Image (tube, rainbow, N blue to C red; front, side):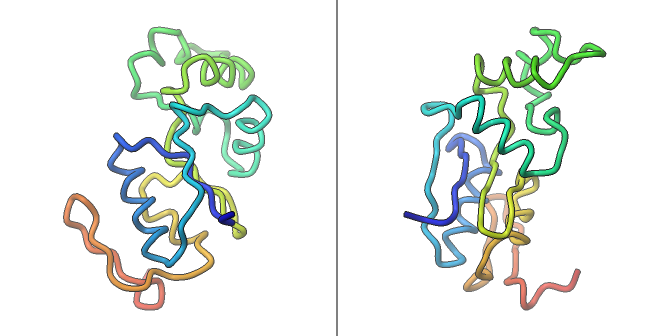
Length: 140
């Protein structure tokens, strides 16, 4: 079993790019298509805690359902956000990647490079044509 997990939506370009970068590092991750197999409450809470980000960061605020459910209202609690994501997995922001080096919401997809145990094996071209170089060649 892989030591890397990606909570993935194959219809999302950012998620597809992130998955491809993980594979370009030489690892085949465990791919969890969260719309088909939603995480449990415990898993979602653990993912949020592991990212070190507020729960709100894991919610897709651009999804129409976010506004329809009133999740943009002041005072909405983390528990209410998690309840909404459990009832409507489309509200889970993606991709979330778990590696031995950390857990991260990989938006933009290059965020995954900071938590991959191995660097990219070569240059990587994203779907939009942007070229990403291996970590050893990156000047940040």
